[in-house]
Length: 603
Image (cartoon, rainbow, N blue to C red):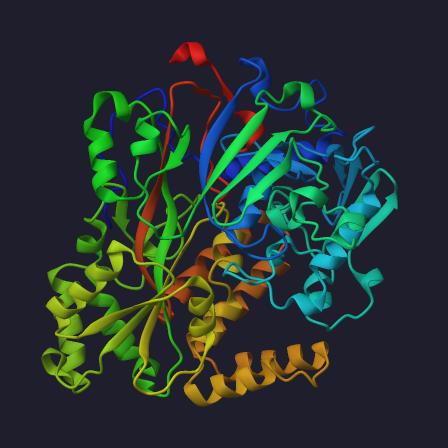
């Protein structure tokens, strides 16, 4: 068995343990089936019971735009309070609650979801928000011109596991008539979804930023709809100031349907560059109210301080750090034995030892996923003396004893992380292999990650991601069949894949068919078996059976050893004592501004 995820952390009133449960999601689906309204007596947000008024200052990773239909850090800020979808997650992230919709029903066969928009809901300009606005938004989201959906920067944010009838097919150009997509505004206040197969996690999936509504007139207007002077939203806050690369200011939206239960008048956002070393001095001086901290030394210092430790919020195993192969003319990583040696020789325990809030990862799937088990790991031992000895033996058998003659590996990253140096050090110590970092600006990282490289640029790109701990999300959306099969293409077939992908003369449907032909016939057998097993999971109507299939699929993904799990990272936030109502959720937005209030007496 792998390491315990328990660490010696003071148990305090602010410590938030992560408790994602299948039971909670099942309960949400059951309630939706049984009633017209999950919350007939609900007043909405939880912040209204605390001290009304006031402001907070928070920090967020910088972004170039806030279009929630494209993967970027900006979509999470929008989700926190500028736009609101049909439903929201509960503060702990284990269930759903009302948003724009106050009622919904599910058909007996589990295929049709009917949402009823609450009476009088409006945009921030006072105009009615209608079901047609949602339908327009989703047609824009699924536009084939937006490119493939995914979880990496720049991809379309549509989540394929939602399983909306013909949505993926429309987004890839296979279906050309949006009327064939299972989304329909029945009338001004009624929105209907039709699924391809029953999906118990559908309602929870609607809490993802891609499903937020956009104002059609604003988006199609002459000015930049994402700028404060043109902003029209429907969330609890409006965007009133945005200084690029510096700060944002949000003010309470008086037109919001639940404005009386929104406590804060103002949210100030400090924009921090990704990967930059952020000091906690402003926080400790009281200039920042809520801040994520990731520097190991700072976390250790806060844990050791009786007062500061009381201000910590910890979400365990919230993100997975991993390595994905760079496509190169050098074929060395196409050898499954070499990939196995690199995985076994990776000093996961040493890498995790950098921080008190990191554990060695045995799988890509988070152990917070209900039903998770070490049994899906690629090896009985993922680190340690036995694993290193096996890795050394494999390298010797492959003609690289003690790493002699092995090419220098490159680790591509969009920011410099301490884990990168630890990866380099442990590969060198354990296997005698040299590796170097290539840390570049995020935009360059995205381009370089997907390129076909010369033989002297071979290695892995470093990534990390977190998301809700459900099997469809962890297996079908994160490190998806498309991503895994692309990683399993050899150099020649990947060049062919890129040529098809970039052929502007191809119709979207033809492009999609040709790309799938390449992926389904030229990737590794393990990657293809993984994709087929995910497809089987999508066709079952039994939730327990679906979970079992997803477990098998995740096991196949690990055995392919195309993507190497490195570490599971806890998310750590600190908040001033004046902050009330804060809970940290697994989804990357972490919390909603509407749930937060301040009590200056607490200081």
